[in-house]
Length: 637
Image: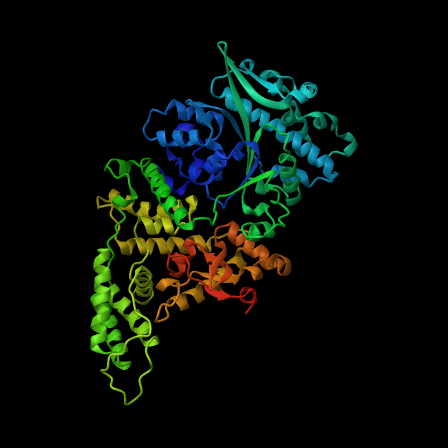
């Protein structure tokens, strides 16, 4: 079969049996469980925002009633138990039965085309809302009938205050509901599909105006052999970013009404939001968010939240490894050899630089020592610290030891008085601050070896996960190049294992392809910012004393938070560029980062950009800059 890593789980549309083995429960725990626990997930309108590939459509398909029924038919399989348990914790399943009637309604481009018609906004809203409600009814009923339930076994319980509106939606019976919804859909679709928009006086909008099933339905009831089950309806509107901005605002306000009893989710990319919503959404003290402002009416779930970033990275590693295992099981060439884990063929042993390069590195450090009068005694002290640190990590490597020693020499020279021409060159001077060796310096040394000697830096399953910036689709794209290479080796009767050098080469090549292949609004300007930030971060990271990020280097620009908050008002074009950079996972905006008793917004490069430009995956190091520095990068040379 084709490499499944080149597809997303949501693209396995053949049937639920093919889809479910690829779904991991971790995103539900990470993003949904806390909202289910506090009762907001199904009671309020939930707007779920994520970059492409963050898993929105996968979740939408998983929550459909027919998918839940399929899952529970196979719940005895050990691989499905964690997913069943998680959906139970998230309130979709109870006593091994679905309690939600989930239906997915994709908001495809035809809705936006409909909005362009030359009608008053209130008429366009009236027709759009009726069309959406009719298709939701059809989706709910289709989910039920796909599991073997007959139309005559379906009914609704109306709200006490909405009995008078029953006739307009067809009544309480499943068959009548279905026929009415089909009629409404056909009437409105004929308007939207017309080559020329009908004249206003030719549109019979009275039927659409009276059709309000969302205002009527309390819950669904399924009666089979005298046994009645109650299901809470959940409508999942996918791809809401396809809507016109004004259309999206009207749609959101309509769904946010408190009196609605049905559960409703809107899944969207950041495209649908204003620059203010994207840039300031997680800024402390920001209360002016036109699209996402009333917490009493709206539950906003960011699927790339900056909260607990260490925990999110750790959770994503676990999720990605589980996802990779599920995908590998679909590939016979690996299954026949008992390979079910990426770690089975992704090596963790680093390849050292060539002996000639090692000799050149050692010679450069000797020159640095003698040129600056560093005593042999001081060198031995520093070498002992390096050796002790590397022994503790279990990864002693001569090239890394020398690169760390180089950084320590530069730091030592910055912390002792400069020697005069006639000073004793062998005198050992104590630095004004102690020198220590830690993971940050070691990481910075490895980045330097990558640039100076092409020593592999991006290898191992954790490095692959971190390069994905907690984005499932990005992970699959990057992993696919490693899986394809391992598969080719197996087909040629060679071992599947990939050396660190192979991994580093393949991942950097793939990262470059992804970067060059960006095709989203303002991608050219986003690339200009990305390149400008990256070049300055590389230059800073390669400075002799490795001063930033604990030694690991820089991977972001930092703008004072109060200055960044003014960008949407003062620099609209820059705000749009940053919005699309964040929306398509080029940047991560880390708001309210505390350093030097100030609050900063970090414009952090994503993992793919770090791999492409050769930067550390360690987060935190940033260059202090101003808005004008960003603007200057966008000016033509």
